[in-house]
Image (tube, rainbow, N blue to C red; front, side):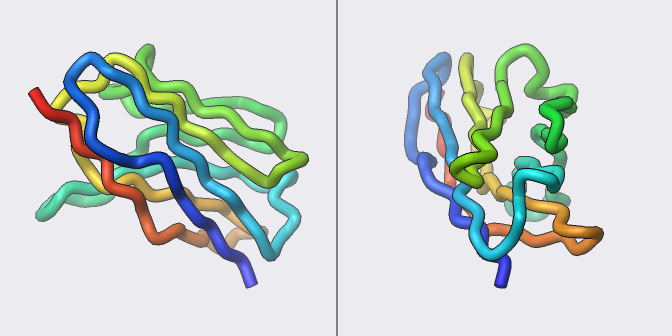
Length: 115
């Protein structure tokens, strides 16, 4: 059974940094695209960043240049380094993995950026 567990969220001041981690189990994740999405109350979940098995990355417009996604296939872990955080980055951040066409989600981790 595929399981994704996020960690690293918390409270940070504007301009600060956080690094999220997503540990995956139950599948061969080194060959699967993975990504980060975020959601605030009353809004749809939005793309933050994705990364393919080969390391090709894609970012949402609002985070490009500030956030960096990476992965360690040996550890089945994907990371999201978030720099220059803004209050509008406040959200629940979710990890996902596309395992042979089936999308799996983690439980989410809260990131709160104070002004």
